[in-house]
Amino acid sequence: MVSSGGRLKRFFIEQKCIPWSISHRFELLLERKLHFGSPFLYHLIRYGRLQSICTTVTAPPGHHFFGYYDKTPWSETGGRLLAHQASFNDRPPTADDTVKIGYIDISKPGEFNELATSKAWNWQQGSMLQWDPRSPNDRVYYNDRRNGSYVAIRRSAEVDEETVFDRPLYTISPDGSIAFSLNFSRLQTWRPGYGYAGVPDNMANIGHPDKDGIFKIDLDTGTSKLIVPLEQLASMDTLPGMRDTTHWINHIQVSPDGGKIAFFHIWQDSEHEWKVRFYNCRVDGSELKCILDTGDVSHYDWQDERHILVWAKNPVGPGTHFLLCDVETESSQIFAGELLGEDGHCSYSPDRKWILNDTYPDQHNMRTLMLVHRIDAKVIELDRFYSPKDKWWGEIRCDLHPRWNRDGTQVCVDSVHSGTRQMYLIDLRGII
View 1 (spheres, rainbow, N blue to C red):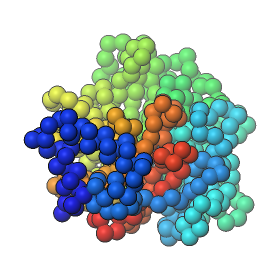
View 2 (view 1 turned 180 degrees about the horizontal axis):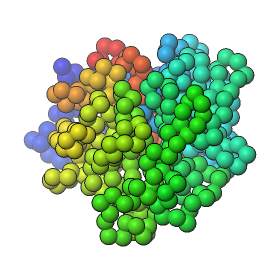
View 3 (view 1 turned 120 degrees about the horizontal axis):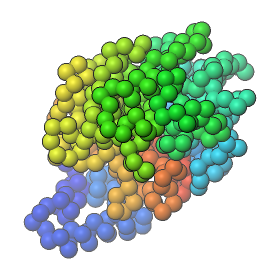
View 4 (view 1 turned 180 degrees about the vertical axis):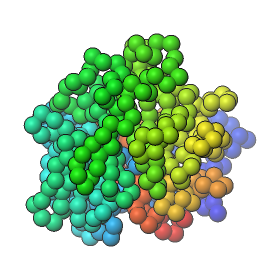
């Protein structure tokens, strides 16, 4: 059902029968005047409600953020929200910069409870802070730099107790038994903002080493094993010039049932460009398959063990779209092509009925947060967030990176619309 405010917005902005000059003036009034000067009127016109459904959960002093969109900051009971706290917000972290690791008690918003500090972090993904699936109210994992190496830490939120793993982690299986790691030093060189500053890549002069790639970590024993070497990837369906350049891994994600992983294999195609192949395999590295080989692949999420939604160049037609890929048949089809026209951080709700998504800043420096129904592709716009690119872009940009809580009733985002980097909650009850 469309609200009266929504109908007014659609009439002036989206109807082709309205002259462009009128719709353009209305849009400027809405996004540049009313958004900042009359927020109640803005929300009434845009959403049919008098105020934002977005509430603040962190506050100055300090800048707070969680990190990426593929993890939930909520504890299992929903009472705690994991967060990073930084003392600055206007530059990339250096090797000397630390970030505080902690949580917010939902009943006491604005109070940050510090657990530890880390020297292995970035603005996009933080320190890979996440709850231990086997103790999701007490133990957390995060990355750190100790004795000249990147490591992973498992720490209790209740007592001063920790376990140190000799490799940093990227992602953890749903049952908490294994994790996966990659070379964050190499990532820092070739994709600044996703790697960490402070430890040189000891294989920097090797384009596709046979001793680097994706590592599986046994979280019971701490032992690790290389399961997908870069040399193996560089040798598969090799393109001209592919073996004479640098290769790396990014964006590993475990499937919902924990049986597979997907990831990006990336190589430097020219001085200013790279190419991406999208792969999946079993968690032991076997059954390695290329899902997409179009060179242009971005954010994704597993729908189930067989299907992945990903923003990528269409392998069988023009344009870049959200594609629903079948990892068994290696086929794909466009999802919501007429409604979703740009890249976003997509993730499925716990019940797999809804897709949470966002956008990059538009011409008004506004990011849009939305829900998309999986079956009929119905789009529900939730809110818009001011994010000026002249202040926060490149490595220090603040993407919304929307994440679900564990029962699909709330969403958490990072945003700089207040002038500081903070975390916000959106309640979905009554909306879906």
